[in-house]
Figure (cartoon, helix red, strand yellow):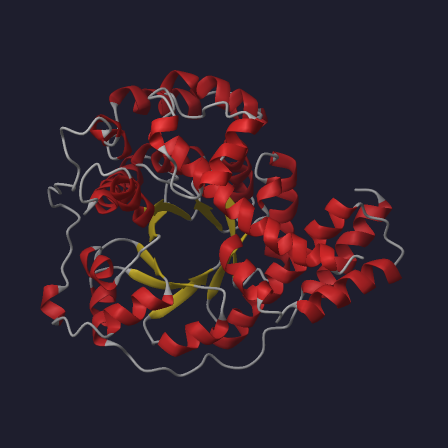
Length: 412
């Protein structure tokens, strides 16, 4: 590392770092959350807003997650404006010459740390902090920022890395360095099975609410239990991987939860990360404890119309084929794996239809449409999990762009 880069890192670390002080807060127990805990489920809160977390915090809650969308909500409230001003002033005062893009990335790094540290200071629990989407297709920059986030708060920060070919490979290295990783934007059993076998992140995700919504939006059925079926199948696949493959310990997060009923249905999963609104709905549901039971081994019939033209695209989300398992076995045995680049992994994966080569125009079309893709615009050769992941990443990119614009307004 050259002198300028070292000085930049030292300055930014100094701006981002805070000593964690005080005791863990005392909070009341919640009987329904206690029931989830008794069934083996860890419960997290999905928000970057301290006040919303405080409203629903209970003794059984053990972590929080943030993302680009949630961070943007905090930043647009104006609460981070002083942080932005002070960070820009310090960079200029130190004579660090950065391009506009570099400046925005560095200020964004400090903002994300400060948002997460507010939560850590308040609750003394782990907080997942997500990388800027601009680094998602670079192994080098994912490693660079992942290491720096962890260094700011190694006791409490978990680094959230999005699912891309480069993300898989970067996470493999970060985990070898014992950096805790939340590998995000997963939508299928196979995506998460590959992550567990290839990189062993601490956590993988299924964004189940969006899977229900994609069915509803296309009038392909009621959408009920579609995401839940994928999530439960993923839990079973991960348990099998943990039981049968040495060095695999990845746990599943059920993410994109929309309501309290989903919380109850997913009892027994490794982790639920729940937005404050759904958490409150679950807490106030009045559901008897004994009605909160595990459905992990249930045979789930999802609300998909079998006669609909799109129906045949959904089973790939919850199926783990022999072909894919053979692909993963060969990949993890590849002696070149630790020097592999993202484009190589994408090329090798083409046989199992994992990483479609989306063009810049494709990505713009996806971002313009929103986080739920229009399946009629994409041929069956584009796998549904791949398309959902890209739509989620582009949705986060759009929100990150809004955050970046607020930073940019202070550079004038």
